[in-house]
Length: 344
Image (tube, rainbow, N blue to C red):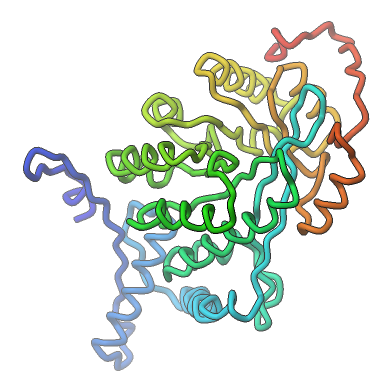
């Protein structure tokens, strides 16, 4: 059934492809009602969907705990903004050449009265499933607009979910919020992953063109983790690409990672797209990225995400230069390696 549904089909000249997630349940000999059996199969189906399984997934009791927790998270999310449980923190993005703060990334945090601090990796997928992501996205954007008034000259990166981009009113809503707070759209970079681009490239192209025409900058997040990122850079109007931290963590220790990062930076230069490396955790990683002439860097070594008040205090302390660290001297490498042969 899965492979049969995988076959592309054509409607009025347009080609479509549908993927299927299949879950099933079998009566264990105990008296199980048809409704209960269907509920179990439904749980298994969602497990297959969330894990992107290509095979049918059988029901097992272990699925109950995760499903119940997600349901409780979804219910708690509904009133989280009104209950002031959501907040926004900001992580600086630094120009590698002079270590000056040039931009900030807005990151949502949820301190639930019921669950405590909930990781975005846990609640964002639930928010996408339940539709709460639309209100959360507006909350983050509005809070960023309010805080940016105190940070003239800095740009702001906002993460956008594929579910948000599918909303027909998404672009207009962002424009209205920006106008209400007197913030010009070109101060924003909207960070997108490949999700929507893979599933609906025609729709994505139209929506990204609309956002671009309004003045918003566009960034392809987690670059290098998908299968067709280079193609997307050619098809879509991206201004920035962000090298995923999984590559940065191996920088200097894995020759393959070194070569890949060098190639990504060269690709950005060739296509006139700014490159940001995220996940910088050591001075060695920062030094190597500067040797490779990566334009922008971000990570805990430079600055952790912090509330707006701490960002304002940081900027006041840094002064006009906004240099987040003293100038680093890049020592020579004993093996005689240079930015041109790091992959060896």
